[in-house]
Image (tube, rainbow, N blue to C red):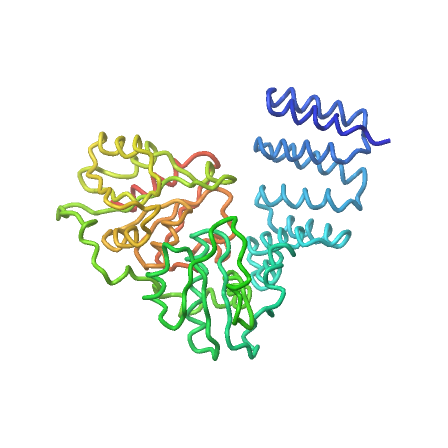
Length: 414
């Protein structure tokens, strides 16, 4: 007999207001009364995972699978937990079992992330195509999906995801240069002029505003379409090839002297970006300004603000600590200005955000501070950075602490 939904609702309410141990006790008691109700095990596992108690989450799902080893949802959630535990091969196996029992696009997409993190680029890139729902692709029903062997003459490469991903996938634009098609590429309006100067063999248009549907007229005249991440899906093996070993972006040719500063010859100028605004992973990716400053010496290093929407109190903290701070560009609205600043830096230090992608694409020597569980984008080359060869990754050894990485950064800067 299935318990009423109000049991889960009560537990969700407790999770918002009670201490962790009390909530777990209530879940275990509910499971004791309803041992066959697998949704309770799943909810407990996700609650434990959110609290970073991954071993407890694993036990909850292991128990659920003992109750019903043929339940696709339990295998799916186990794949999630093993991914969080960085057991990528185990995660791949669980997702495959879930798909075997009950195929779904969601499961195949999550499988792709585990495959990419485990280093299976070909399989992972193929399955990465399942990141879209039918609703996402509905606007393109009248267009074919483009492939290099297709005879389509006019192809729309449409924008997806965020600014950092747009820059990362632009690495593949070089492979479109010699193909017998006319490519129109959507991009964030802040990239339009820089892209037009750096990739003159492509035509660029502004991507639709976030949340706004695509007018049918925007697709008129095109024979085929491809999401920009589809370039990686087509050519995953090219991540390691020479064309991607060179910088692909330069600042726009117009000089931005209003953003420049008077350099002191005895100092290195280091661009810094320390905060992520990502709703799901921002806290794990970010570094506090107080911690970040420990890597620098105000007598040797001047700091260049590359942080979009930088908190004023963080900038004041750097100045109060004795650092020369260059803060001349609006790095949220003026990406061209941010690129100009990056081109003037001796080094860049950035967390996983737009500044890291932009500095990497420009070929500026960069240290990337990457959280303990890296996004798949930073794992596909086994510790090095295949997207940006001038980026050196400093991957967090202990979740929640950047002490080791910042100490190493201080040594490297010295």
